[in-house]
Image (cartoon, rainbow over all chains, first blue to last red; front, side, top):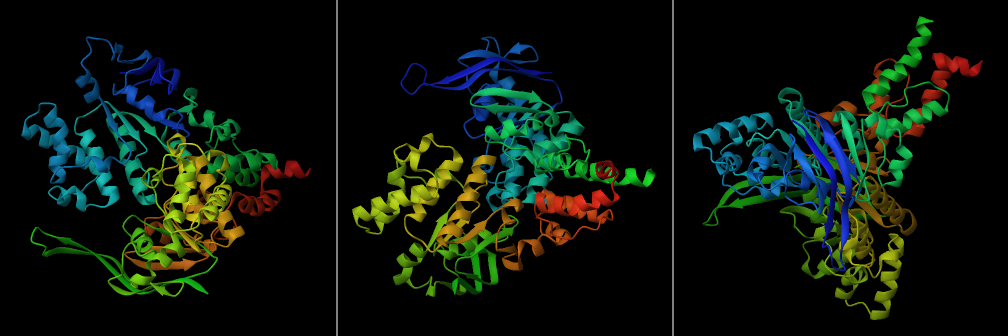
Length: 286
Length: 295
């Protein structure tokens, strides 16, 4: 299963004085099971892009292929597309509405036509994946903490068993532990179930840690589509785009400037630790 | 002099059923004691639900303590007659920029506060000029706020508070929704307001990096202050912070890990520059790549 965008262009309010181009000729292909980080400054076109990927917005030109099928073609069943590509919006906890957690998570699969029993099975499974304890199932979602609410909302999308999961800044406003928990469950979904993940994030540190590849949007265009290491090599260009590289990447640059041969591509704390230890260990061995 | 004094503050959220009987009581703050000195830059850290936002709302009387006292420049927040002066003294900026902008034009938005306070028109114009230049948004004066990025909107929101000439600004996760450059701009702006204009800043954040430059870091847990010290001292306590669902800046964590590996690095290294300052001499003496450099 692959997700492919071909020459996607989207113009808001075309033909009026307010016309503005939100996506310009964006093409890429995401293979099955990839963990992709989507980064870009505010207004760079990230949200517009992800709304095309599950057919919420129609492109002005270009299209999206899911497993080779054009999702905007006439014969394509949009409901099926949306069941296969789950989209978790920003602050998804604002979309919780049911009386209790379990009923809320069941809503999606029931809406897809599953029986109450089947829907409940899927809901429970989804809640387990996001790590919400059973004692909360019958509670009102509004009594939960911010991080818990967000996990319920993500479970609501997971219960429809999508093959691709798109999340728009799922960790905004969470404390570091809440951040780690959410990212941890997303990573597990990716590794254990082979879900394709597209994670919109403003944290370079997070995408450095988890993503296989990065999509970098700037001024409505796709600038880079490459591994995090290759992308962060362009840290100067990233800064011009209102982005940055992780702190560790800058440290690599500082160390190299000072004459120490560390890997210029190190971007996580663990990688830096290994590289720096190598600098010392070399001496013991020699 | 203390601009903020919280003494044995208790605050609870009550949940009521249809008959208005109390169903459940959640304690948000209990026996909270803290004083904040005028002109200081204080960061408040704590996990979701630790009471940070509740505390922030008590500081300009959006909520009143159930027990204990909050004094803002000596004024009790329960004193209704002082409400306007309290809100003038202590301004607030919230997380979501879209929820706090009300006008269609940037300058009108910034003028709203002083207008509401009955400031003379000429003076309003001066204040708007001044506030916009302090946050670096003069060029957007006649623009519509909906054309701005999140970081720019947040700076307009800050200008709106600055125009009321506050002595203190409380910011509740102002950077949570921003991209890296928006975050940088907002942090730079509040730092300048503190340094140049002496405005007391209380900055609540989940980004540990943003606390590095503060004069003081307060860590909250279960509605209480559990740590209160300089950033260096606070970020030396890596394991304790992790137990409180918090973390440390990446560079601090790296230094901490290297120290565990046996490198003689001090605790509480906060910035890349500091780490380099300690690491380079060590590498020159004991490392392999460095000897080549020396030779």
